[in-house]
Image (tube, rainbow, N blue to C red; front, top):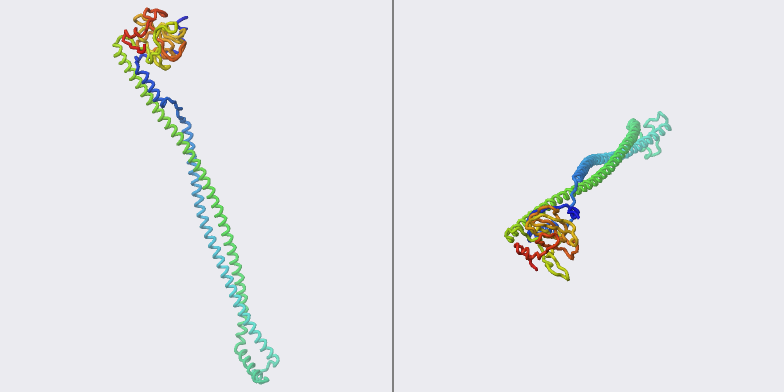
Length: 425
């Protein structure tokens, strides 16, 4: 099998920082910060610019319509005030016409009374003249007053005739003139009464019509004001809804930007913490190893040591750690093989500059390729649970003779001789 066919993992990702025990804890802490305690939350909605623009246009349109209908309401209210004044004036005119009609009727009634009095006076005068004329006719035209007085049956009739003769002598002309004047007055009064009644009735009818028209206009204008006010209320509700929508979208945009800024700050803080951890790990490694050029291949708990197990030999040391935990090159050298390996699932074989071959098995992913040179402390893979494995761990072997698949020795004392301590064995 060729070296290229062994490479079954994703494209290599090279990492050259030198990490020690504190690096993993720092990276995990950064992951917790970014996910809110390990529980990832959905990203907030970020409204598009088009959504925001549409909301602004809708709000502006609603505001313009509210302004337009507000002008209509104001005009309708002004017209309503006008017709209210006109209705009041029409009502007042009607009352004046009614009052004038009543005055005309009272005048007509007084005129009728005066006419009746004149008619009574005329009737009385006519009666006296008739009586006088009858007596004159019966006594002849030559009968003088003295003769009439002599022609009496007794003292009572004498007194009556004398009085009549005196009245006729004194009032004959006046009675006749009064009769004529009374007749003229009667005719004039009657005509005036009829004219007054007709005029006042016409004025009252006109006033009543004007009052009815004004009341009709008032009712129509009140309806127009009510309709315009109802439209204004509905448009104001639409404007409010548009404003709320715009505020919601703008609030969502602001919240998203704040979230994005916070996320960017958290990621920057995590990267900074990671860099600090890497730097600290390199410093710790340099201090612990005395610059010998060897590093611990992974951090974690020693779960199995080199030696015989159930009738077979366990040729390496197992370091238990979560999947994804970084695996580092124990020494500088050249990658001999990276990819699938029987029993290991995935494995990396590295020939060190000292000639020893170090093996890294059960890995989840690898980040190097055959023929690639790596430095001590460079991440070459991550802990996995592939192949014949009962849990996530790194199986680490050392072949000091340089053989790829044989000549294994206990890695713990080999590393200890080079300044690297692995406890638990």
